[in-house]
Length: 429
RNA sequence: GGGGAGAUACUCAAGCGGCCAACGAGGACAGACUGUAAAUCUGUUGACUUAUGUCUUCACAGGUUCGAAUCCUGUUCUCCCCA
Image (cartoon, rainbow, N blue to C red; front, side, top):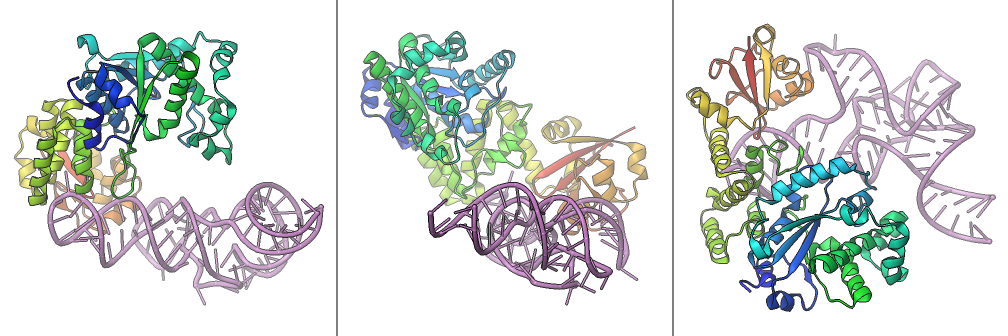
């Protein structure tokens, strides 16, 4: 084998648990391994990134990654997450999501690499034709209730209650593994640490039903050093889809990672080698204020998910928005640069007359901008008196001031709420 | 079935007839300091409006009172103890 996959994950801090014999199997021969994704949205988000990177390394080590889109399982809902039961997705939506997800995955793993090409399957395809009776005869028969009850995911829910559907989830997922084992010669399932129980049900099913041997490997749950959830912002998930999360925002998310987190993230979310990462970390600790690590991390991931071009735009935008620029710097930008910089910033159109007629800044930032910056005058006023609002990089001191700010490019105003929230107001005739 | 305790804003948690939009802590947001980090310090945190203002909140529905989150009655739910 080109590389020892298990060891690779280990030094990257991506290995939580692995079934005995897995490493040997992977060193013995190129092996097919799969990870399941929920097709609940038409885009993946960065919470999925650990699993995606696992597949990247897996393929890189010479193995064949199989991506399972959980069309069937997504309908049932895994009790491991405490979330309520899921809604049924229509087949149309399912197919749409599947193709979107595949497009995004193609940026990471190679679907036309010859022998170890990645492959995408949807478990809806083998579940839709399977009758309930067949399922309980062929699958349910092999596992005892006490075995299923022993799982953590079930135990935790016993108090609060879980439906039979959720209880059977592990069988459904276990059958996936079995099916892939039989039909795709897939011997390994990977996933987050919360999936361990479900994965093992699969290997157990393969053993009991077929006497076959299959393996399991899980990655740790990623947490941030401050204890908050990884991958969430005020606005919700950080998506890979540029429509849902602009490349600028995406880049910013990574750039904002704390020192501690960045050292972990860069191992997990980039393909950089050990020596390169060690050097970067050393360099960073020499001059932490330069935030070399964050920059490298943000660049690497943004370039992969979007493009190098988007990275450059994001860097440019960041340096203008966060550098020590003043009104003059903004005015001096040419139109093309200006628009590129503010590509990912929300834009609000305001008619010229509305702008001229508004009595004070407070109105401008609330009513006149349709509540998109501040939903009410009170909030605007509070934030202004707290010193948290700037226009064109100039702090607003007086909330009753009548707007007379110099336009940028003859028609824009840059409003800033706090340090990181920008809005572009366009004055139109 | 019998007895007891409780339900307060995002969460925890005070208040127990007027001075209560409601102490405090956490969280969140903002400011200062920094490195768009962490820590620390400061401010804001029911809504609207900017004024010695209005409105809606203290499980739900009624009642007593000039006046209630605070007292009374009923309802729902939660917890504990004894059967």
